[in-house]
Image (cartoon, rainbow, N blue to C red; front, top):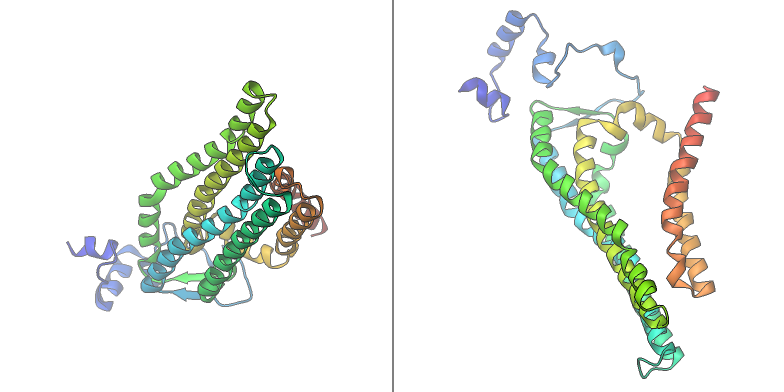
Length: 298
């Protein structure tokens, strides 16, 4: 019963027992207290030049809970940005084909107001969430020293969330993939009625927004486990590498500015959304080239 409580972090053995255990098993007390699965080799740890930040059990719980809460807000903000041109597109098409009793300027003005309000709401969610999580920003960039029981607790919560992650990620990807179906159906069965194409494009954007919501939300929660465990993209080596690469920090702001500029200049919101999937594919390729060039220089 006592050992079970030690393993589940419900209690901690006293110092006398810890010293006795270290003697029996021939290991250091640090090895017993730090959730290491193999014999630790200090020489293999990267020298980051900065001390590791200690993370207590309470702090880890608070961080995971805040990440789960913030994931909903960030995902909602992204969804609002994707949905923002839908009403502008729909009202423009409805006015052009005589479906509503509004002038062109009235339809465009109303749609533009809603677009700006939705983007503003999304930006508000991004900023407020970022400010709330700013005190934990170091976890993504600095080495961590998780205290006794933290790694075990994080892995337990990760395993509990794994089925939800798989379900939401799969559902989000499927929604994005099948989002072209409304447009395909309208082209197949309503080729002569272009207003149905406008409805289909609006439905497509709505499905993409829903899919992106699930993907972003579950990815943020899943990443929070990797951040505390210093795995995947958050190992100490990756953290040091990211510090020297400024490309990701400037790429997406430039893409966002380009998207808004192109959309407002051309007023072609029905097609300018294509910049996002293109930018995503381009980002992966450009980032891989930058990393390869950097490694070659080294």
